[in-house]
Length: 172
Image (cartoon, rainbow, N blue to C red; front, side, top):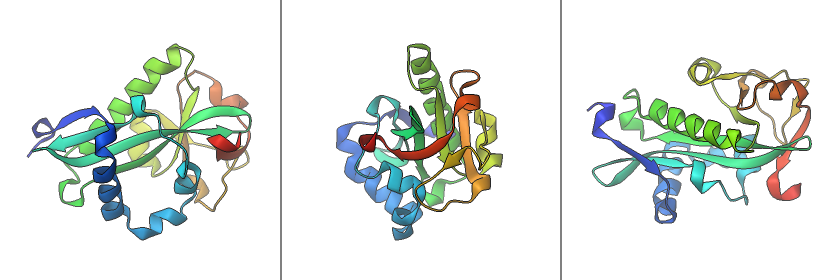
């Protein structure tokens, strides 16, 4: 199978249980201990910026964007990005990433959030515009490898003015 065998579409409310099952399968129960999960817990993700990939009516990949607060600025946190293990390496994750980044760039032009943050592998995310954040600029509520804390500017120069702790959106 190639990436053309899959359909990417906006997430719908009816996908929730399938996405939960997929992310549990991909990340296991340890995902709940991670800083990124903690920041998303109890906060509604942005449906207009969240996507799934289907194959034969099954959800095989997902990406979500959730508002969080960095310092005093609302930004987006990407994740989880999950693809069924048996389909890794087929371009599904890259398709989801490009779709999500393109959608956030369109939104940013209309007064949307200035950047996206995530915890992940720089080699994977750099082609989508992500760069490492200086550990001196950001504090997460739980431990994370500082070399994996990344940002993608949606508004040029936005990262330069960012500083402080990241908190859940509803705690703002």
